[in-house]
Amino acid sequence: MSRLVFILLTILMEVGSCASSTQAAGTGDMVTSVAVFRAIGIAAALVGIALLFLVQYVYRSRLSHGMYHRLLLIGVFLLPLATTWSTSATVMEGTKSVEACNSCHVMHPFVNDMTNPTSPTLAARHYRNNWIAKDQCYACHVTYGITGTLEGKRDGFRHWVHYITNTYPDPIRFVGSYDNANCLACHQQTEKWSRVNSHRALLGEFATDRIACITCHGPPHPLPKERRAQQP
Amino acid sequence: MGEQKDVLYEHQQEPRPASAWVTRQLTLAVDCAIAGLVCVLLFLWHGFGAWTMGLGTFVGIPLLLIAMALYISAVITDLKTRGAL
Image 1 (cartoon, helix red, strand yellow):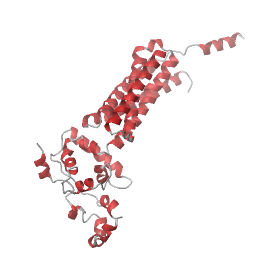
Image 2: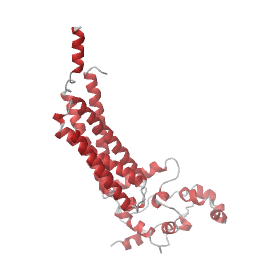
Image 3: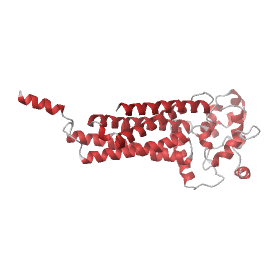
Image 4: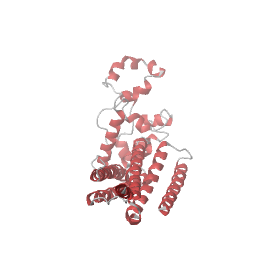
């Protein structure tokens, strides 16, 4: 029994030091909440796998009935609960990042354009001027409001299904309409925006999405033809 | 006095082994938990990728939830069998 505890503690210490050094190296010593959730999840999953394997397939005959059930409570209930929580938190937070969007190849032209210092698109100008400090894709593509996050996750799931089933057009096309509220959430509060006569005159049209902000201020991203030209 | 001794003796006994049904449920819960933890670990270790995220989130987490449900069901069945519930 003491040997089992020793093995598990060794795994936990090794994973802890390995995960923290990996995170520190990857983010320039800046530990983010996603990195913490991820490290907790990795540690809990590794300890859980080792514990369950040892308890069920190696030491089972040597463990008392009570000890077997106590270890199963940890291995089948508490550690999976911790892993589920940390994985959900990693997914919920991690999918907001530009890196997560860029992990699918169809997004490469959009992210390449956004980070291009000479691009004239709306996304590139926002990125270049640091108007949105972080999670730039998420900030503009998740509707503001109480259901925005849920809608964002639902759309993310739909995109993921299209991606793995290979049922999407390439280059991809935006279907639907872009909600002006996403622009107005930041811009409407600024004096610079209010000074423009046409903004004040068309406020009702903007509120009902009859006129889109990108009609005058677009394009937000490279057009399909430009994206096709960028692809190798 | 003799009865009291018998009662004490009974309490000191190792609990009766679980029924075959409970044992099967627990074994299945352990296997589901190991498989789920491996899927989630692959995702967390590899990071965001279409396949790893699908494996971790849509296979790993449901397996972990099934394992937890099986464990709870096995514990409740066991406690009911022993008359504790």
